[in-house]
Image 1 (spheres, rainbow, N blue to C red):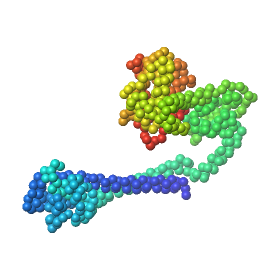
Image 2 (image 1 turned 120 degrees about the vertical axis):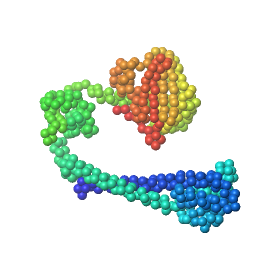
Image 3 (image 1 turned 90 degrees about the horizontal axis):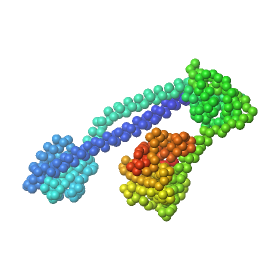
Image 4 (image 1 turned 135 degrees about the vertical axis):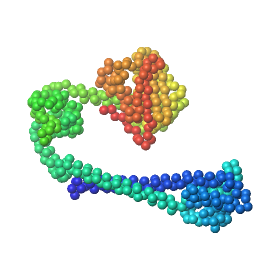
Length: 531
């Protein structure tokens, strides 16, 4: 079967399944909506009848049906219900659409309304199966009076079905239109994909790729091709060897995986022949435009090895990336170790194991709180440990007594709290003994973490950069040596649909406030990976 036909049939099957499911759901919802509308109407009618003074007064007359039957008929006709039946406390009818049944006992159990409750449900009576409501009739017209009878209002199930069937043709028409539109879309997409692959079948494409790969990888020179966005589209075996690259380099920007000089040649629009260094190799690089139907779609570089062996400097960018990843992991690892240490000091070994398991490394915990409202054992133990560290440095770490923090099944709040407290400890320690205040707040909108200190604060010119990976005010804003904690905090906040704000604190230093939206219980927490 041609690929175009396969695509069309698969999409058509998906469209038909979706239309069928949507139609069934719509019918079910419409049926439910009709029943709810009738239920609301019947409850209102039944309660109105039960509270009518003329109906209540008729119970004391010698012939109650003479008064109640005309009223019930009038209400039945004006409201569109099938019947309005009023009975006494013994279940004897005072009204009925069939006058011959007045004075006879009802055919269904009246015990629920006679007990003071409202009955709603489907029962089969003298008129057939009906959706009905039964309410008690009180002597005083309200709940304070004695129950002297019942008022029953119902609609035949056949009438409910008729109302549903009345709307079905219009719904069916919309479903048919949706199916036709979906089918037309499937035809259009199938033709579009077919044209995009040059009207070739998968077997033909596979054959072309095999031939191309055999030719490209068989030549002795290295070949690198990039697309219009300077992403590597092709690397042959010799190019991988000369440039020390692997298959993962394909699809990445050339500037990220190649020597700057080589990457520059691929982005330079001029055709060139240059001798360049790549690692310890001296290469002759020849670049030119890649043209398809006369349109420039990228650049091609041919590499030839012209090397004896040269000693070159280590690739600092690669080392910097590795250092950044290790530093980001060290932040999180240190905070977890502090938390586990605090839990063990509290004697809460089961909760320590639980925390380790949630962190992805196995393990058990027990809980305690520094402020009464902090019920997250991880945060409580972390704050206790940080308090000990702060005391050793002569710093006062205090937690607002009004703080609240509930466990949410993740370690996000603990990670954020640990990083902010660590930064505050470092900032205050630079100026000698000081003070740090922590405030936690859990609301329906999420969690707010606020850490204030009396340190030197954050200079205005550094505010825009402190959340960038590798940026640190300790090194004059230079990247690559520090500055990963706040970047991690910012990424956690954005993942949790929150944000981070830095401001001047009342203590004289900096105040960091982090908002974290509520965590979904059915979404597993995964450790944030810093690129």
